[in-house]
Image (cartoon, rainbow, N blue to C red; front, side, top):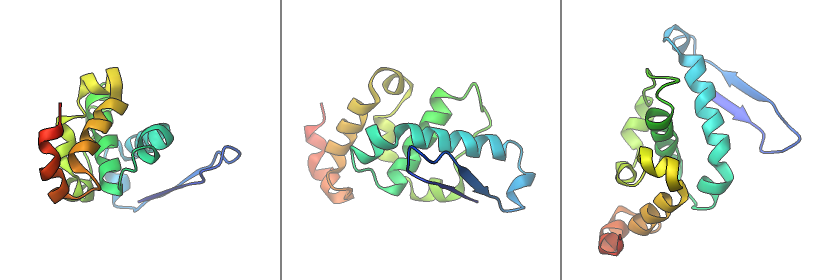
Length: 130
């Protein structure tokens, strides 16, 4: 399934292209829409500002939905690609409290750990984490 949106304040259209197999899964439409809403909501202040890569972005969105919005979609599960490719080191920094209190600070600390998205660079920087 692909969700296509235009990054323009004048365009308010989201097109959802669904794989027929996905429509059989309970809640697929609700979770897709919620995922996209969270994505749009953190696009400027988190994703672009901290230059998060695709799988870092997907992990942050998944964590926000699973931890903060679980009352709305308790059945939400990351898709298989997200599970396989996510950098789970971000989980240490992004939790319920950090989402509510200061998500940008949590992402700053995470980026300090990982440097330029490199796992090797992240290992060198682990001692810098407060």
